Amino acid sequence: MENDYLIQKKPFNALVLFSLPIIVGNLFQQTYTMADSAIVGRFVSEQALAAVGASYSLTNIFICVAIGGGIGSSVVVSRYFGAHHYKKMCTAIFTALIAFLAISILLGGVGLLLSEQIMTALHTPADVLDMAIDYLNIYFLGLPFLFIYNVLSAMFNALGKSKIPLYFLIFSSLFNIALDWILVTQFQMEVTGVAWATLIAQSISAVLSFGVLLRLLSSISRENDGIFSFREIPAMVKIALPSILQQSTVSIGMMLVQSVVNSFGSEALAGYSAGIRIQSLVIVPFTSLGNAVSSYTAQNIGAQKEHRVTEGYKVANLLVLFCSVIICVVLELFNRQIISLFLGENGTAVAMSTGCDYLAFTGFFFCLMGFKCAVDGVLRGSGDVKMFTLANLVNLFIRVSFAVVFAPIYGIAMVWYAVPLGWLVNWIISFLEYRTGKWKRICLQ
Image (cartoon, rainbow, N blue to C red):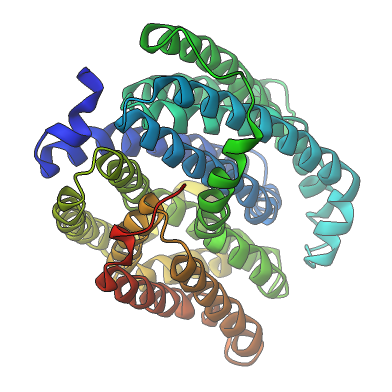
């Protein structure tokens, strides 16, 4: 089949061809989340930017659960696809969609009930608390669409159709930004306007994506072993849980240190929020490449071509170096101009310096994030998840403990000083596990 290029083409060509649509698509996804912040920051107030930023660390966890769950499920689907077990593949896809729809409804309901308590527990500044809660409540209403959309994207990637999610992300992003502008500047809906814009754009994309997936599956196989199978759940959970943890490490850390950042006031929070938004954008090439390596690894193991996994991993590291150099140069030279896009001309000195300091420091270390994502992709795609899980837990512990212990004493910069240290230790643990070669012998079944 034409989608077999991950197990047929040279590793460099296969990974570049597969990962580029994922990278571009995720860049568009991050662009419209950045647009939320930029529009409210420039056309509403600095407090509105802080409110969206205060919510971001929590909302991003749910995004990571959806993405990580999709990746875990896609590894199972990729194995079946690589082995040409199309009936089992179709059943696994529908099982993943049904399971995560149920999870999203449950999480959305809990979120609606506890949004105020959560934001209060995070010590959200009083002048932005109500706006942050309003944003969160609308977000939780749209959680099922968010989950289904991300799981559908992972299914397309598992089938080698990474361009399809790209098309939908471009549509969703542009539509979202247009709605942001209209609802905020024309209808004066402020923070709730960007929340409703995201919900509407994602719901339309989720429905359209599902229709395209059904058509694609009918062209591959008209048979399945049922639309839901409990037998597929353990294999998916085995990969999905560590994947969710890996995807969520940064976001959980952000949420846990959010209370520390909040204690420095809404001005510092606004600058930090702008910096975090930029970080979410610049790590896209690395996280997307890691996700691509997972599908690449799973398909090649399914096709019994383990030697191609090692070759692909080397290629991934070269791509990481290339991307990290470009990112470092841009952030070091233009960090002030970038932060100004969010704060506008009226941004306070505290907000500006906080955002610029964050980008200027972390810009040198994104290669560590990339190396960690590449090796994590191999371990996740092969099903070797024990040390992978430990590595990400250690990463999380370092980031949180540094912020909680040292930031109140030495200042807010301690929040981001621990970031590269966490990435480095995460990579060392995962790389040592990769070197053992256990991933070659571990099976999902």
